[in-house]
Image 1 (cartoon, rainbow, N blue to C red):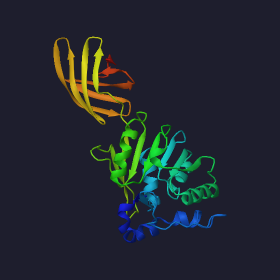
Image 2: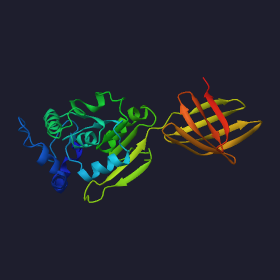
Image 3: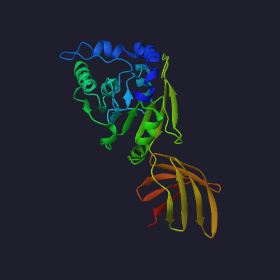
Image 4: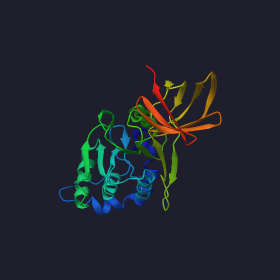
Length: 275
């Protein structure tokens, strides 16, 4: 879905609805006991509804490498197609949607598709909902709403994957950009992996790391043996950390206030966050 401030583009997006409406046509509109049929551009709380093309849904799930062990949460789940598609791949999937009619429609579609045990939907405000259990978060919101969600997302467990239909997260650079084949509108997705938090002073057995972090990137210094070296190529992929200090490449894992790994793939190193 997209925000109501953009409702004037609804008519222009009608072709998107036609291209992506097969899901609703075959799985929801004739659902038993459900008379509601969604229309592109319908208003809601802060949003209007535009369906995500199924080609992009599939591309987004491919980008995050969705498995049966994942717990996916779709923020603003609309007609439920992302949640149901994830459940069909074996994942446990949950949709949070403000419009109660869309929630009922989605639940009926999940029953029809035989995945109601893994695809659930709740009527709620995404900004008042708790979804810290998710290993994958999907969304189709304009940048302003993405920015409101960004602090919550960054506080999630390192390694959580986030993928957005069409819209970015301001200055938070995506880890991956993908495009769906056979798609004509709203065909680009952006993926982020929640990074571990490493900013601060870390003590090592024979030295000290001082780090400054900007999302998945960081820089700083390594002081050791009376020599201070700049940190370069600092990068986080969830809890995986890598950086260079001088000619030495450090790789390892971050676990809360501890990190450890190998220097140049051989010598062990470790560090503890100083209080």
